[in-house]
Length: 458
Image 1 (cartoon, rainbow, N blue to C red):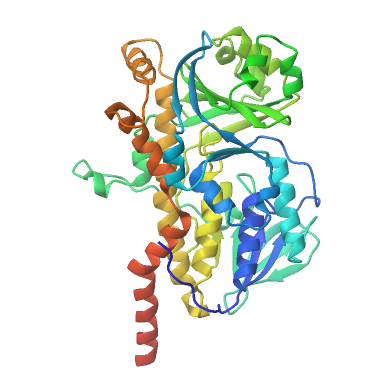
Image 2 (image 1 turned 135 degrees about the vertical axis):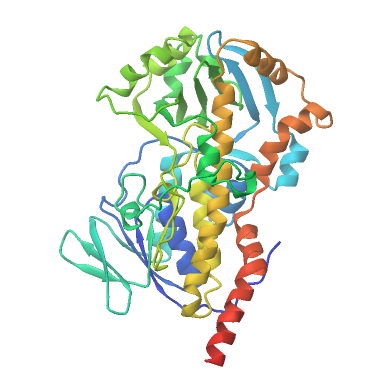
């Protein structure tokens, strides 16, 4: 589905906090749509980023391919998911990304370099002379008498706009601009459709996924005959062990090999102050010794924490602030869709604001953004939480049954393949533009027409 956009927009001034990849994408798209954009970032221009890798399933890769010069970005095609028993390093089964299915989905599954993609996006913004102000830290937010948001910088300067877009990550200041709403309590007679989305995620039984991302040089792995075989296949390897899951792959020859480890916690995480490698030593010790050898080669690593969100609210009640990326909703770093949420949110918000033919429509379009992303954020995170729960089963009948299912020889036509593929296809087939266009046809168009009618009658 592709619903034509208006010939022009009523331009607004968008203040993007954070020159993250989602911040740069949304800034570029909004400026191309005709809006005035200012990006404010407290860091240096072209600063180094941690090489954690970016996994791009078809739903993300299709969006990314719409950006100009994207062929200059080096990416590696993933041929499927290889499920490995963590304790023995034995391959249990493989889910192949069949060519005909990927063609129907419009793209392959890619693994990209975080640093390369950031270089590409910075260059894209420079090409269009984006107003990016580095070394400028936002310390507070206020409003003018007319209600316009004003960013206050550490330097003492202020920047006024029409809309603030928070893209400064989990620990950024943007999240503090939108107070969390209290979680809705479900009653015993609530049916599934009435249940609070957050409650549904809490029912999965995971409170925190504590983990770490390791970056390893492939040239170091090649020197070890036990590790070198990991470089030979294009599959994304899923390591399964009790209460934990690992995921590893080459990001792009010959740059870096990534190993992501996540530990399932059924209680809220309390920071111990320990180095994350020491904190997860009991988990790593469960894995085959080759995993420890691999992780010992890491030239850098980063602690990761996935907590259940306190709130699903990503737009403030005045409709002057919108959050994207980890500012809005922490992406599941340990899963196949690690950057899906951030990519999709940037494209969805830009698509909606490309319909801003009157400034008065802004609150309606932002309500649409909240509605679209709430459903998708919950769907994606719930899928990943269920996956890590399944991959982290302890020894017993359930794990035996899981391994037997994963060991089935998957073809493109049998019933088992259909069952295994069904949930994955739902995720891979999602289109952020279509979601925005469908909302517009079902709700947005009628809401703006009613606003025009009401104002005309007044």
